[in-house]
Length: 150
Length: 404
Image 1 (spheres, each protein chain N blue to C red):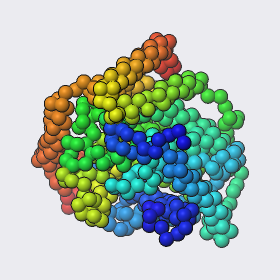
Image 2 (tube, rainbow over the protein chains, first blue to last red; image 1 turned 30 degrees about the vertical axis):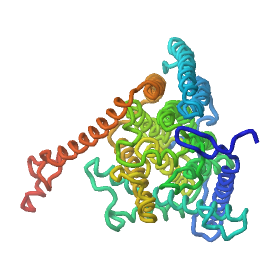
Image 3 (cartoon, each protein chain N blue to C red; image 1 turned 180 degrees about the horizontal axis):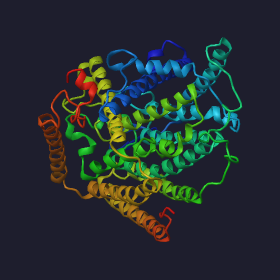
Image 4 (tube, rainbow over the protein chains, first blue to last red; image 1 turned 180 degrees about the vertical axis):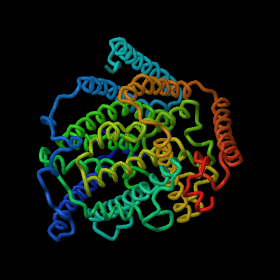
């Protein structure tokens, strides 16, 4: 195993990342899928028992369009603005992925206090440069009018 | 949780613990969403000068939500003709799944946590963000234009509010030096000036930004564009009825409680009362754990109440206003807060740090007390027993006949 069994953070000594900690989440997910399938089956059973009405008509099953007959398909084009927002999100979310490890580790206490002091300031200025580069991109997008909702 | 089932053989104890936890969480989410639906109606009623539900029975009409639940269970589930049937049936459970899994990493007391994850805060944010998939699928698969518009709007809104929300989570993480939510709670032990929100000016602002962006990513008013009733009928859940619709609502209230609990853990001291200088579970044992649980759930419920308060106080924003508030204001502010807290941690001397902590916490406490006293002693706008804005002018023939 490459990873250490414990990590030292400013919050104290903690157990290191261990994939086995996450197995119960998959058990939870399986249980949740069981819950979903269970409710679907249960709703079918309630139909069979006659507790729930099931009387579909042509008009009832029509997609709701404020009382009118639907015009055309609902699989229609939507505005490209939403696509731009999604692209923006990708850029900023990647930034966040880089900032999380910094936020956890930057102020943690290492073995040698002198080295920690130097390291801390160096990493801090690196992060400032990182955010400054992103700010340039942000300002460019702003000037290009990406944030103008037309 | 696993220790309780230690009488079983190794693979089965973890399984039994997971089953028990899942049961507890589903019950908790279902019961709290029943309570929240009742509370939402009562809050709405009070704020609009009416009574809210009273007719069904129970003290303050609490049986109303039970009656609603029974109605939803036996209501016909319709699937529209144009719908993509499999995706349509899957969508509500996908949304519920996201808010359900988030509860695993929430500590309800010192060590009372479904699974103590070393990346708890990150896990919580990541999982809660997945709720948007359910909404997009619902919007796309319904085969209705209103649903499609609601789903697309929701996608754009949640995706952009995700960024400032995650940046605001980073601010207390920088202070705490860990992503483990249980450790974060333990660090805020003691009196209320140890709470993260009073640690420095940046966490104070970050708390408010986090709460607003969390409200937006739970698609709550004033940011509820995905289901804007006045524009999109009911948005993404226009075509849903019965049990599937109620699963969407359980997901919404579940994630509201999850983000409120996250806010209280990250900023408001987690399960600590703020007025006991020790950890209750260590001093009082089981009673202390109980107190912790009550305080934690109480803080979460209070923040959910604040969300309802905001919903009935503010008008809904327009789509361009929502997006631009996020991209032009919250995103730069959140970046500045992150840099600010980094600078503060590096360069702030001890006297400034402790000075700010005591000053801001005691100042906030006094401000809240002053506000409460002011509200309680303020003169009433109308005398007791009369309604504000009620017609008191010329009496109608009916009123004259009854002798008033």
